[in-house]
Each structure stands twice: as structure tokens, then as C-alpha cells.
Length: 505
Image 1 (tube, one colour):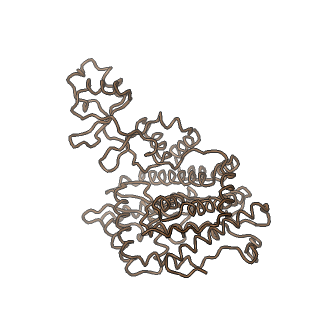
Image 2: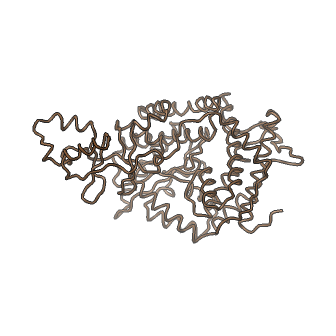
Image 3: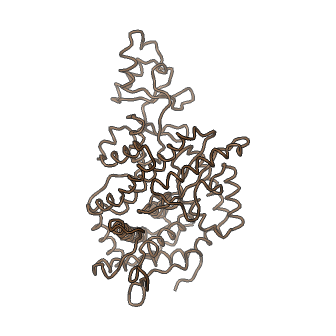
């Protein structure tokens, strides 16, 4: 069922917010969050492992490519032959007859691959870590495309490569913490250049994902290889790729189902404890709600996760709304991605059977009121150190995140980022296109103020970095734009309420 085609936006507010959004975005940044599917070459030149080297080299020459993917008898990617392989293994061998030798004798096995959903930042990270220049893009056993270092060079990426290298070269958790401590300065610099706040928080999120991966790899180097496959997933703002400057730990783990799965419990208990302790040194505090893989509630075998999710849904436990973000605002960052895909498939199948979850989520956020009072006056703190200020993150930005999440989950949309969800709602014709722009513009503006406030708080050396702003210190134009943004938030809240049959006055 589609949403009502009748738009809910205020035309004047939309026009003003769009103008403000363009003013805030003066230059384009590196496309950190773009998926490799947008830049990969497809279809890919392939051959079979029994093809003769001579024929394969001729095919590469005809097609003007520097690599070819080698498939096995079942048409699954089995290896790769590159120009480097030709020089190293073919041209330097006097005994190799290329007219009689199959390519499987000289190809590189053990392919390092990407998934189509992996980000360009992730591709750069993998290239830097493994020292390869050709990355096949594979989904399941199916070859989807290929990404080369030469392609990525065209995307203007020196800064992310420096960050990637420093993370991978870090020899201790403390070194990773020093890298993370640079984020306020990095964010301040990019804000000054006019790069959008959304691009900046995406960059911060991808850096943080790399730090998580590096911490876990360092732990595994100490504890030894895991006895079975597993998948670490991040959730909350990590899972939405919407990290500001102070994200805490939010992660879970899915362990492969094997016979007597419990016998591996001690290994994973020790590993996840060390992981969380390493993250603390790297600058990520413990999650107040204990949503961490060191908590057995969020570290389970896949079948145990199925039972746990069913229990949460069927019993409608008091924390169900909060746990829903663990389930639906998550993405895999380390390990066997197929485990997460099964976890996600099951969670969305449950969502279709337990519509009440969406109502519970709505009831938890329905009481949130935008901080605008009589005659458009901002409602601020009445006392304490933040007297005269308001938390732009908790009294605006999160309202958009929560409202859009509910609308997206109602339609079975698996995208996790707020802007991605808005665009998916518009593309699916569940949301009027102008309303999509309205809510996106409001989100971008609120995110800008939240990030700018946190950056200022950090650079001033405050012990606690928070997103408080004083409306009286904004220009008259900025205050006016903020009112328009809050008007959009109110419209979003009304739209969500109407989906649950509530009368909106």
C-alpha cells in the first residue's frame, strides 16, 4: 500500500530549506559512502581454469584489460590472472609452454573480493591492506564486476588513503585512539571548506568502522584464529553511518551454527571482552545499555539469534523498541557476511508478522515535541550549565531519524541511513517527492548544527562533547532556517501519526 500522494510539506519552508542546503554545500567531497557497484566495471572479462594461457593472453590483449577473472567448472570465481602474473610467472619461465599450459597453473588463487554494497572507502582500505590493484566484486558465488586501483585514483582520494594507512599501520589500541582524537580537527577543517555535514559524518563513520576492524584483527592476532565463522555487526549510529564525534560502542556478533556450538563459548567470550576493552582505548566508551558483543545477549549462534528475536517480538518486552534499533539499524563490518544476511532476512520476516513492533516504536517517540513555543520562540534549558541552550541532536535530529525509520520499516526497506531511507521511500512512491526533499533538507540542516556544536565543544576542550546550541547566538537568518527545519520535523511526526490512524489537529 502506498502512502497518500497528498504532500505534507510547507512550500515556503521547503524553498527556504533548499536554499540553505545549497549554501551549506559549496564543494563536493570524496564519495566516501558510494557503493562500489557505482564504479565497478561490468561485465567482467573471464576465462575458465582449463583454458590455455596463450588464448587467455590474446583475449586480454583484444579487450585492452590488465586482468582477467578465472572461473572454475561451476562458473564460480576461482582466481585472477594479471599483467604482473604474466611478467612474474610466464615471461620469466623458459620451461612454460603457453600454448599447452592451462591458466590455472599460473593464476593467483585465494581471491580477495568485495561485495557490491561495500563502500568506495572500503575498497581503498582493502587495496591498501593487501597491496592488490584488482578487486573482483562478488555476491554469493556470482561475479558482479571488478574495481581497479586505477579507477579509484580518478576519484581524488589522497586524504582517505592517509587515514586508511595510519589505521592499518597502528600497532596498539592507543595509537588508534590518537587517530580517532583527530576527528574534531578533521571535521572542523571540512566544515570550513563547505563540505556538507552529511559527507563529514559519513567519513567519520567509515573511519570508525576501519578502527573497529583493526581493533578486532589485533585481538584475533592475540587470541588465535576463531574456531568457527562469525560476523561482527555495528548498530545504532554506526549502523546508519551517522556518527558524530562521540559514538559509544554498539555492536553484536553472530556465530556460525555448528554442532555443539556452546563449546566455542569461552573463545568468543574472551575475544569480545578484549575487543570492547580495546575499543575503550581506541576512544569508544562502553554502551550505557550494554549493547555490545561481550554481552551474551548480543553474542549468539545464528539459530539462537532466531529464537531471541522471536521471543522479543512475541513477548513484546519492555525494551523492544530500543532493541529494534539493534536489529534494523545494523550493518556487517567483519567476518562472514552471509550470517548477517540470514539474520536480516529473518528479522524482516518477523517484522511482517509483528506489526505491533512499529506501533511500539511509534508510541516511544510520539511524545517528543519540537522545541518551538508560542510565536515561534525556541524552548531552551531553564537552568544548569546549559541554561538558554537546546540540544539540537536530541531535540530535533533524532526525531527525523526515528520518524523516517518507522516509515521505512513499514515498507520493508532495508537501507539503514536516514537519507537512504528517505530516498528509498520516494523511489518506492511511498513518500511525495517534495516531502522527501523537505525532510532531507531539514535533516541536513539539523545535522550541520549538531556537528558544528560538537566540533566547537571539542575544540574548546570541554570534558563532555555535546550538541547544545544557543539560539540567541545564531544570526537572524539561521534562527529562521532552524524554525523551518522544526516545522518539517513536526510535519514528519504528523505524517507518522497519521499512518497509525491518529487524528492530527
